[in-house]
Image (cartoon, rainbow, N blue to C red; front, side, top):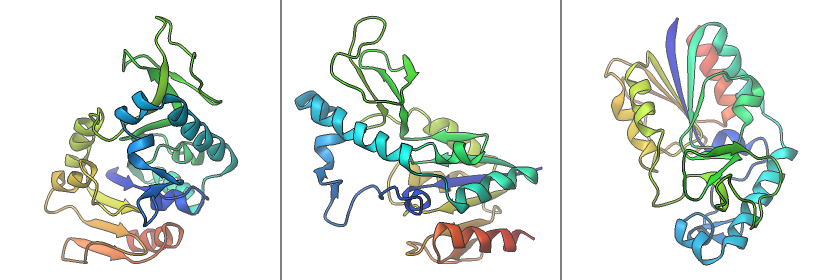
Length: 224
């Protein structure tokens, strides 16, 4: 089986009803990103940050995977598929994809503020006073701005093995995720699905200017 490595971003979840990361005005659900997605923001106003992610978690329970998520899962019948996502939702897993790496953490998990390896599943609200076993406050298991991205090295190694690279719904402008393209072979074909692509087609890159759901239909046709 050929290795199909897939990089996904907010665009694939947008069609399920999950808002993209931030609006054109730089706000995320009406908040300055620095307030709700940095260690400093959490230190200054932990209740605001916890409530922000509680609202995101509630939204996640109300949405479902879309056709693009399901199409990726069906490709496992013919390819060894590894999904590297910048998304913190679980829509890839709910659609049936078996190998998903979350670069920026997972909304349905929390971790200790003192031990990054003390991670647990969490589906409801997270409040001040919810502690780990050693008595430290729990926080969302999200990689905030200014924090290390623990899964980036593993993702680099996976990209080096890619026979095909598929990019869906991400501008490839946010680092370190954007740098993953540099780890594939020069012979590896790249397919880029986005309604407003930030890169152009080349001998190596095929740009599919469309939404994730429609673009996946085109991609599967190109594989035949």
